[in-house]
Length: 114
Length: 113
Image 1: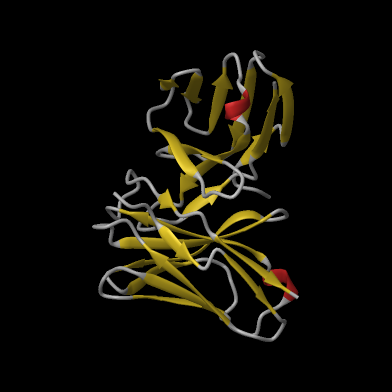
Image 2: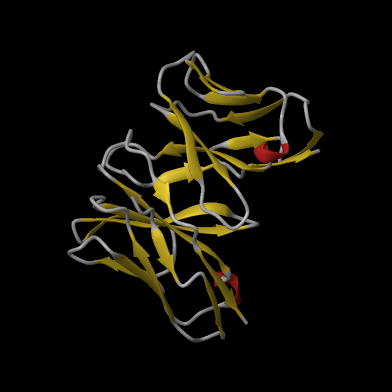
């Protein structure tokens, strides 16, 4: 069974540009969450999608947005990139929307903003 | 203030040594998860503990959930280089916040051959 797939693996963008990251969850998983990982702040929750609806949102500015498609694939977009947006962006999928349902993470997209 | 305080932040040991990583909080949780993340990869779930005082073993790894469900520990016996990685504890925000985990800052473990 294929795991969570994130594309691209690496991205280099310039300040002010925008970027779109893609996530394909494990087949059958309908819940997709996004996290940002930096050395200073660690892993921080961005948002969660289930059945094409955003269910939860973390404490990030409106420049960060996402969506989920009918096949459960998800994208996140960051507009007007800032240097501080440089991070590893991780996507995770879950079979159920339940506290006991484990998250399965992809290997992330490494975004560098110059 | 961090919801979850992990200690130590860094751990560098020789192969064969034992170690313990701690995850503490002043809040009570219904469950707590431990993940390991290796360089270039995403975190992988090791265990979920749900009952106060619960002890779970995964080969050489022993996980314990505090009696009051505010803290947890991870003990590794006879560490091996393959145990090297970032160890993270995490809790669910509760309510309907499924998929929204709050992570500790992590413990970077390096096991030297």
